[in-house]
Amino acid sequence: MTLIDNHLPTAELQALDAAHHIHPFTANTALGKKGTRVITQASGVYLTDSDGERILDGMSGLWCVNIGYGRKELADVASAQMNQLPYYNTFFQTSHPPVIALAARLAELMPGDLNHVFFAGSGSEANDTNIRMVRHYWALKGKPTKKTIISRKNAYHGSSMGSASLGGMQGMHAQGGMPIPDVTHIDQPHWYSEGGDMSPEEFGLHCARKLEAEIDRLGEDNVAAFIAEPIQGAGAVIIPAETYWPEIQRICDEREILLIADEVICGFGRTGNWFGSDTFNISPDIMTIAKGLSSGYLPIGGSVVTDEIAEVIGSDEFNHGYTYSGHPVACAVALENLRILEEEKIVDYARDDIGPYLQKKWMALADHALVGEARMTGMMGAIELSPDKVNRAAFASDKGTVGFIAREHSFGNNLIMRHVGDAMIICPPLVLSHDEADILVDRAVKTLDQTHKYLKKNGMMVSA
Ligand SMILES: *Cc1c(COP(=O)(O)O)cnc(C)c1O
Image (cartoon, rainbow, N blue to C red):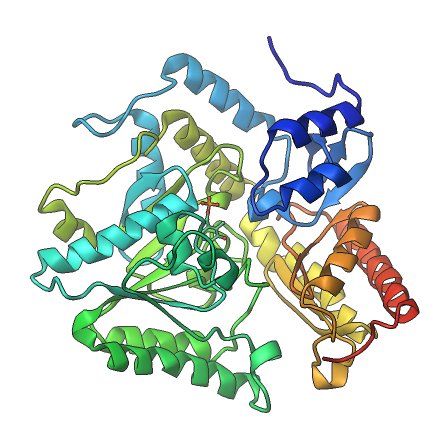
């Protein structure tokens, strides 16, 4: 058996990585000089690196390892499925038991009449599917001009040409000719940095109504859909005010447009319910899923659609699909992940136990001198770093400079926190214990203290 192990010393692994591996979202030359951290194994909420350090993973990998690492059941299911049927496609009027079982299970779990799944290999692929599906849907209904998809600035919907166009990240649009035509972006409901003097509730309504204005600007006959994450994840865990989603829902109900909830992060327990749509009482026409669907153990994503959309799309051949749509091993692993989430009541644990426990400690970080705001829903949270917390001021340094310094301290403290600009975010496995939550917050406090000290020493506690 060829198991790639840490049989090489760290420096050699780093040198080979620098020589041959191009990392995503990374300045690779600089990383090559510094040396990557090599993760060799993981169990529960802890990673181990090639130097034997144990690191608390406050990000669940990339927002995906909801059930934690090292669940042997998933490995066993993958092995059994590989032996029985490692691959078959679902294109040519064929199917197989794992894809049938997973589609049926998802239909049970989904809110409303979201009963039909088009499988993909990732969230990006699923959102690409959504672009084509909503446009094709309207064409089949005799309304081919309804093509434009409205999204939000600073949204993240994936990294392919289509999904990154739906996303609202300027740095991504700047590379490679995006957005594709007929995608527009309205403001995000990010009260901390954009709410000014409005109350969060006023600002939530104000942002939601931008959707109505954008539909009017474009003409309803030209709009296919609105896409949004219930809580923006990569944007910096942006939790909209309570007023936001009801107003968005009202607008989508009144206007003839489809609502796509991108639940790639929010789905499968992350917000304390099975779906973010449950938490915010959203009734989407399409839901994008990936990440927590398999807890990241294998790549799989999908678009889940209503009975009505499935019927319209089904009336014609949809010229679209991926080699790995409904991959049997990925489906079997996802099913086993869903079984564990359900039977071990992990979603209930996130909602009623560890979620509230961690939230209380996390929200208290707002008292720290460096923190302008703390926010958290379910098991995803953020703290905004500020040189002047009373005025929610940004730092004079380039955006992200301070966040990066804090992240380096956090890594040094063996806690994975991510920074988005100058906000620090967490999204730990849902199976985090109380003791582990205590350790997470202790390390976060230590990180804040070290960062604060560093900023003061270097004259960086200065407002923009
Ligand atoms: C990660 C993410 C995606 C993209 O998923 P990939 O599997 O990385 O392609 C899409 N939408 C949201 C909200 C995400 O967080």
